[in-house]
Image (tube, rainbow, N blue to C red):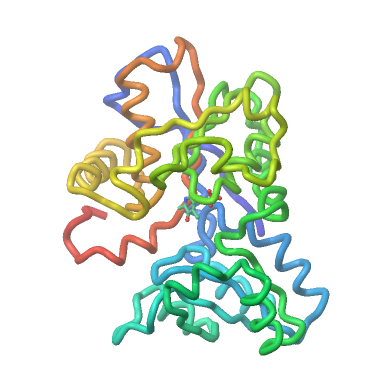
Amino acid sequence: MNIPFLPEQLEWPGLPQKNISADILRLDRLHPVISGNKWFKLKGHLQQALQSPGHPVITFGGAWSNHLIATAYAARRQGLSAVGIVRGERPPVLSATLMGAAACGMQLEFVPRREYAKKEEPGFLRRLTDRFPGAYIIPEGGAGLIGIKGSEDILRLTDTNKYTHILCAVGTGTTLMGLIRAAGPGQVVIGIPVLKGFDEWTAVDPHGFLTMEQKTSARLLPGYHFGGYARHPPELLDFMNRWYRETGVPSDIVYTGKLFFSVWDSVRKHLFPAHSRLLVIHSGGLQGNLSLPPGILDF
Ligand SMILES: *Cc1c(COP(=O)(O)O)cnc(C)c1O
């Protein structure tokens, strides 16, 4: 995939601290569906899956999952069939995300939540591969080493050495760990967890993909989950509209809205040293805003 853009200066007239600068890497512009960080986490998996063409890829997600629809679209483009295991009972009306995934030809299978929670257990996976022999299974969210390695390429899109701080939203932490592994010496990578209780390295990196040194040089910045995953109180929605008016940058309610809030709040509190040069990763995900009734967001 060609990436015809560079980090842009964040046009932020109200930037509360004048002696720092902030650029934004608009991965949301990569592609309308395979948006943001998802392509980076998927590309290695798709390469592997293409080794056994004719077999489906299977992955997992909720009704508004950016990962699920990105996989559906990317698989179709590569000529692979795809099965999506969806958390929860089939609703009477499919979400826009699921309709989009189905329109790409993804076969959707609805799994009750209690069952879905077991999706990484050997028994669950065996039942899947019994039904879809030779299938290639992509972990939920594209998590794991292949996704981490793919995410390292985000910092190789362009020369990112000049930045002192790199900031991203944290779901599974896959993107964050890729950025940390690819960052140069002295660069501080800061992850903003959007899940409650995901503020410790033991939670983000239970498999030890990062060295102690990498964990020490990076930061998890807690306190910006707004009540938990996908929670979006009015305070967040108001901020997202204000941020859009001030900077022209749209955000999503699950990840980037919380990321941008944390950037705004940290700058306002002068948490970055003078002359810091921030790189904020816009990881995409705007399609998820369709879960809101119309008229709430100004974009
Ligand atoms: C999936 C997603 C993330 C989280 O990425 P992880 O690698 O799972 O931490 C962040 N932002 C957006 C917009 C996403 O869709």
